[in-house]
Amino acid sequence: MESRELQPDSPIELHLRIQVQPGKRLAFLDFLGEAVPVYESPGGIRVRLLEDLSNDHRFIEVVCYDDESAYWQDQERIAHDPEVKRLLERWRALLVQPPEVEVYRSRTV
Image (tube, rainbow, N blue to C red; front, side):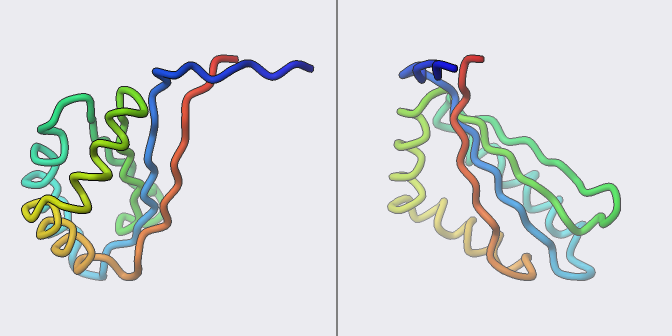
């Protein structure tokens, strides 16, 4: 079976599998209400949240990038923007352990 070529403008999805510290669920959700507009502010980025039905302290944050360029530009922003760095420090402080990070590219099937 022949594999199909990736499209250069394919969307990228970043999946952050996380567990929030006991008793910090509401603080986490409040934090996201503040942080998501900043995360999405450059445009070409959307953030979704999936909650585990069996454990309301486990989530997957899904960061959707319109294309690979938006993904790499955001990686630069994460590395260098002081506001984003402060937000990520606050986010990490709410977690039990570092997130499990998975990056996916959309493929045409």
